Length: 334
Length: 265
Image (cartoon, rainbow over all chains, first blue to last red; front, side):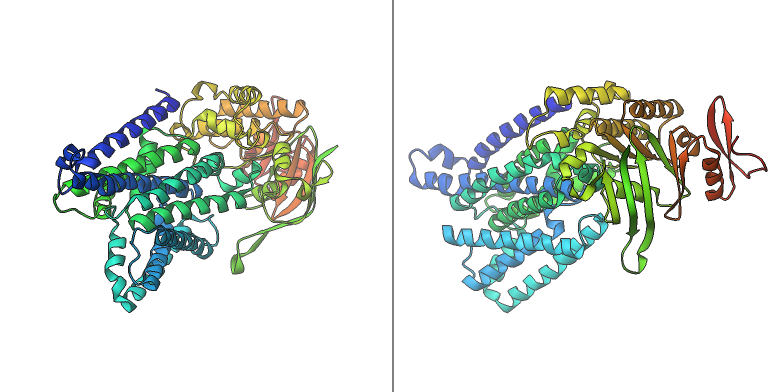
């Protein structure tokens, strides 16, 4: 099967998987599938379905899609298969900004009001972009990947320390910040869903439109320059996409681990593609991954639930380990 | 006619205490429709010179493309007229051979415009010219070093630029494909294109029309590859540990101490 057709088949499979997981996500929870069966007659069951299960399941898809997209963009932009949105300071930047907003608004940040939501998303976005820019400044550009990753780690540690300091100074926000750090889809309502779903098409469109530039960049910065591409402007646009996508996802669901790193690699393993297609497929893959993790998080210890970020960390870590063992083989890591 | 000209070209690499001057006040004229090879010892500044000529490196002095200052030519226009092929271009493992060659058409295509029939025709021609057409659907990451080099060469050819600057284009190529590249370079020059190649192997470099001999960031000599003065310059920059001989109507360079009276005819 040629690579174009493999991409198409993977895309269709991921859409079908997302649809199936949406149904599954509506059926899993502390009250089980009874809520679905009784939804027509029982207003409480309908409310559980409409106001809790559907938005969180759909929200998990949207957040996963944003992270998958951001991961694909980060790996292409930084020409490093280990780059993920979080390794470059965007997540720690977003987390610090969110902690800052929570501190200012007194710990009620997860209230599902549009204005607060948008305020959080905006702060997380600005924090994410600032985190990436700080990494870029410390690394003196994107030419040296090792320096870049080191700078990302430094920014992560320093901004993390600042966030911890903020949390210590204002214990009221401790629980909210801790929940944020673990990552959860449990509090995603329709408002959060709307923010993420509204953001997805534009960032996806920009990333897709810059796919060719990422393809050319894969041959090296100098080659891309020699092809007449306005690299600084395109790099700025991609950093914007990276910050917006990560910031939006992080603001609504906290720090969900590994989805951004694993989704593009899974797409590359299953259906290698130019970046234009890779960003679309990585978004679909990220959506399915987080949706599946969300369903698992609710089902594994039902009626309790695991923080979904813990689950993605375990699953993603395992996948990364497997990828490392494939190292050196075609399609493997680096 | 001069295709590419350098005036007082200087360049430095590295930063701070490690900053090192690599090119010093280079004046150079590269004739149009000719194949010029740039040679010199390791660290002479060959690749840096090529990058500076392509406008891909901050430099002192001026580069003129067909008499116009390169800095005043827009990026896209420059990319259409001047093509640069680097050495050991890594990455792009997930792109098909065809997609990689199509990247060469970027300077000719509109923003977001799909490739035209003409683009497809050019890419096919380029891939056939480097015998890479048969594996057009394979992924770049699954190719050997030599196969990869041929695809990257096709990418450069697909630009259809009048001036081609190639850094070590023979790297990883086996002898038959080296011969193919040499024939290609000759045919490009015969068709009026200007070919400039940096080569560390002197024998293939001697098959060009002209040779620029570089040492320690300066041009030691520029002249026809068959000239005795060129051979003498080669012997000089390689510490007289290189001999140029004629064999079957071609010049070849042999490593080893130079005996008296050897070299040029």
